[in-house]
Image 1 (spheres, rainbow, N blue to C red):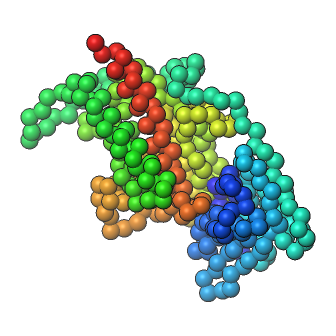
Image 2 (image 1 turned 90 degrees about the vertical axis):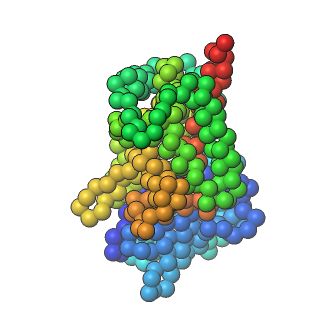
Image 3 (image 1 turned 180 degrees about the horizontal axis):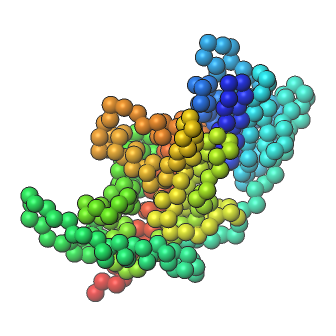
Length: 349
C-alpha cells in the first residue's frame, strides 16, 4: 500500500482482493487508512456493488463521491487507486478510472478474473534447498559460533532434541488456536500470536539470550524454511510511504512470488515511509516483535510506537495490516513447524 499526502492532494494505492460474495450482503467499510495530516480515508462498499470514497476532514465537511457498480469474479486481485486533487476524488481499478455512479447510468465495471499460477507448495519444493541455502548456512554458522548463555543465578542443563520438539509442538498448538480466534474477529489475540512468533523466529542479534526455537531445530538438521513471498527488499518510496500487503505463504499465490527462506522474509522491510527528512523502514520481524513487546504479551507500554501505529492504521475489511502480517507469518510457521516435527518423529528410533 502506498500513500502520498500533501496539504491539498493525496494518493492511495493498494493491491486488494474483493471479498466474496460480491456484492456484499450489507454495507461495509472495505478499506480505510489515515493520511499524514490526520484525514481519514474510507472506501465503502454498498449492497448493489457500487463503491463510495469518503475523505473525513477534521473541522471541514467530508468529501464524498459514489462510483459505478462493479462486476467482480470470485478469483480477483486488483490495483486500487484513490486520488484526491483540487477537492475532487478519483477512483481507479487497474489504472482505469471508474465513472461516477450517476454517469455510469447502471453500467457495471467488469473486473477481469485473476490468473492464478499453477498450484505449487513451498514445503517439499525441489528448489527449496537451493533457494534457502544462504539462510541455512547462515543459521548453521550463527549457532556454531553462538556464545553459550551463562545463568549466574539458576543451575541449568541442555534440553534434549525431544524436549525441544515438544516445546515446538506446544507452540504450534497455541499459534493454531490464536489464528482461528483472530480470523473469527477476536483481534485481541494478535499480540499473543506475535509473542509466540517472537519466541520462535526473532533473532535480532547474537546475544546469548536470543535462541529462537524454530531456527534452532531447523539448523540441527540443516532444514530449509521455504515460503513464497513477493520480495520487498527495495520498497519504493514513491508514494511517500509504502506498506507491503499480505505476507508469506506456503502456497504460491501470484506469479511474482519467489521461493525464499522464512528467516530472509522476516528480515525484509514491510514498511518504508518518510518522517520529515528521515526515511524509516520496518522489517516484518521487527514489526511483530514490537507488537509482542508493547501490546501486552510482554509489556503494556505507556506510549505508542509510531511505526506500529502507521501499520495498524491501514485496515482492510476491519483487519489492520499489522494483524494480517501476524496471521500470515503465524500460518507459515505452523506449516513449517509441522513439517520439521514430522521429520523429527520419523528420524527418532
